[in-house]
Length: 513
Length: 74
Image (tube, rainbow over the protein chains, first blue to last red):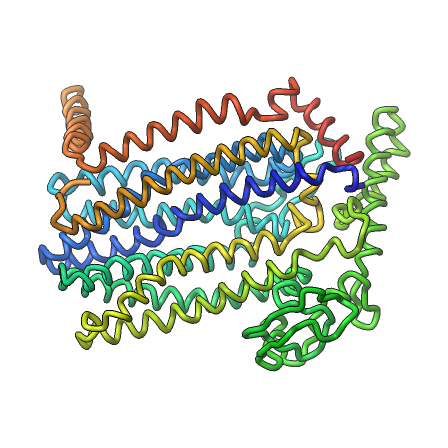
């Protein structure tokens, strides 16, 4: 069925969405994280009354403002793409996404837009406490608006609290709280926002290290490093905990993604977690050893994925071919059930038009019986349920490896700063500066694991990406892809230039934003 | 009552007016924001990103029929 879809169109639509989302995600982590760092600094200022903290707060607030201004509305483009390139998907999910996105819009508008003005214009005009309250509200508002987007994304990974309406071809929300509080959504929200806090803390470390290297604003830089290190360390530790929660949910809800993330072609009991490895280019499910070499922690994957050291972790072969002994249904069987669901939906539609209610009811019963496999009915090849293994594997391991290094980095930076030794370690300061781009790489890798890892699905088990696309010409999507690439590059260069100018000017470089 | 409301509006107006006037780098940022919003909402939205279902079909019934056809006969 899916064979009739223009693959070039699907690929260009995916590439365009990926480009926009990756670009948007350059700004979001800094907005989320810097807002809290600023709020913490301003709290110290209000509590101690020391002017140096006001100066520090205002400098970082200025950088926050630049990032916020350049990043504003970049997420809107994703919504345009939903309407133009992903119309089947947009219609299919409309009722589920409507509420979270509306709440996001209202929150973003009232909390961020209102209080951000007080934050920037309100110094000396409102009381210190009201100004501080506004800064905290901006920070909470930013994270809260991220909540709704992440809830929507989590629903696509694990659709809960909904029912597909065969009369309107839309999913309808049955239980708002099931959507909002699904374990996938809770983990995704906590993992994503805290990883954003880490990126912002790395940004603060990077800029402060530059000041130390230049022997400028030493007290300012050291105080910033202490705040960033403590905040970053706590966030990074929390990221590790929520990462474990996320991986557990992937094991339960998206076993093919987990198998791809770990390059697990054949399932096993007491499966080990790969710390480092290089999969073979011709890796396949019929071979046991698919790595050139690997370093793994024995039984850890079973423990993390199923909370039991000897639990069986299904591999790619189990998921495509099935494993009766482990009660795992083959993808082929799911495809058959999916085809029954789609056939019944089609019959229901036809009988309803003919006003043959008895046969329409009977078709509807068949559809409901198999509707949880609906998406499989569009697939032809059982192997197509497996996402791209090398991309999933490498991005996952890069993200985890960098995350572990960040914890170490924050500990070292904090220890050396408290001992007054960091400013003399020039090589280390230069290395710290490189960790900021590494923070972005880790964050983007996280999204790539999430999104590439859930292929072929736009909505897990229900709607494949290829069916979610609008039937428009691939060349039109390619044209807008190039347009975006140019626009985004110009904006990114503008941000970097303005940001660097302001950083070089330092805390003394002007009172106002 | 009216006087109080006018006074409050006046205060809010001056709060924003003075804030915008005292901007330094902010003026450059506003220029970036306005150019970006123009490109996004006028150029991209109008010419490159029409809402497929909204522009091609008149009502929700037609839209749902179209998507149903896509789902049952992709």
